[in-house]
Image (cartoon, rainbow, N blue to C red; front, side):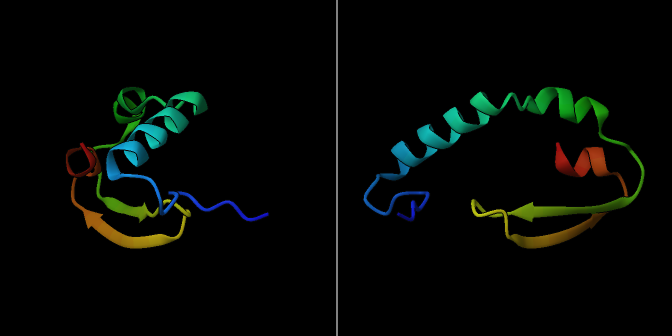
Length: 67
């Protein structure tokens, strides 16, 4: 059986709640990751919920751009 996320029958608020729960369960801490972010030039990738790259950006200061 294929499971789709977000579920098309869910409201946006419920989708956001489920997404936040998934991030929390993964142990990902955005504040800690931002502390490690370099202030040098570079590129960054934005992914959709299926982990497909949807945007490639560049920045002179990665930390400032991502924060």
